[in-house]
Every structure is written in C-alpha cells, then in structure tokens.
Image 1 (cartoon, rainbow, N blue to C red):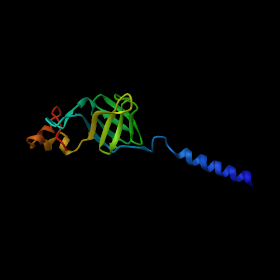
Image 2 (cartoon, rainbow, N blue to C red):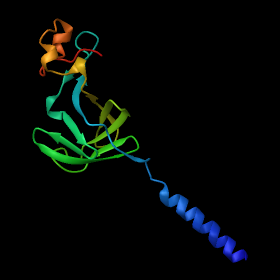
Image 3 (tube, rainbow, N blue to C red):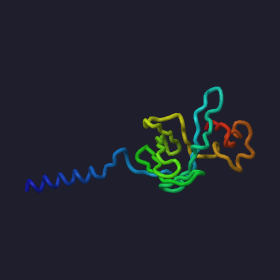
Image 4 (tube, rainbow, N blue to C red):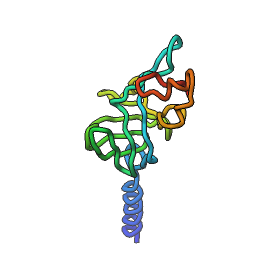
Length: 146
C-alpha cells in the first residue's frame, strides 16, 4: 500500500514537471509586418529606420524578408529566428507590438522593431500626409513618434 502511494506521488510529480517549459510557454506572433529602427534623440526624429532589419510574420511560425522566408520560435518573451535569411537573430518581446533585438550576450540592444500601423507605414493613406506625418510614410525617413 505504501509503495503504491509513493509511486502515485512520484508519477504525478513527474507528469506535472514534464508539462513545464523552461523559459515560458511556446507562443506565436500575430501576422504583421515589423519595421525596425534605431532610437533618435530629443533634438531630431524619434527613430531612424533600418530597413534591412524589417521582417513580416506571415503565419504562426513563419517570417519573410525581401531576401527570403524562414521560421521562428517564440518561447515566453524570447523570439528566435530559427531558419532563413535572419537565422540566429533573437528578440525580446516587450509587448505584442514591440520587439527589442538581442545582442550576442542576450542583452537588449538599441534596435527596436514595432508592428507596422498607420503612423509608421507607407501606402496610399500617406499620399495626403504633410509635415511630421509625411516623414513616417517615407521608408528612408525617420519615423514619427507614436
């Protein structure tokens, strides 16, 4: 009887720890385009685009760049691009719309990638924009704060 109880407790404990994922749960990003930038300063633009770092999430585990497609893995708040042109790049997910690129030491770098929305994307809606709004519509221009 005692031996059966010990075995039941051990099996229950083993099953519960097997379900735990180191680093957090496996997750996915919503399909979206991410535009990347380096921070500006108080005397100029809020950020400066780095178009070579941009990428799009196309479905639950895939991303795309002009250079090609790849896959990613999101565990907890750590995004790792596991194949394709950006293989090995890692990001810290700050929120569903904000990623911070990680350096070789797994520490946050200055490069930030944000989900593309109306105030930081190009397209037909930008044709009528003027002043600071127009700056956010031009890929080579600094992004408007938003």
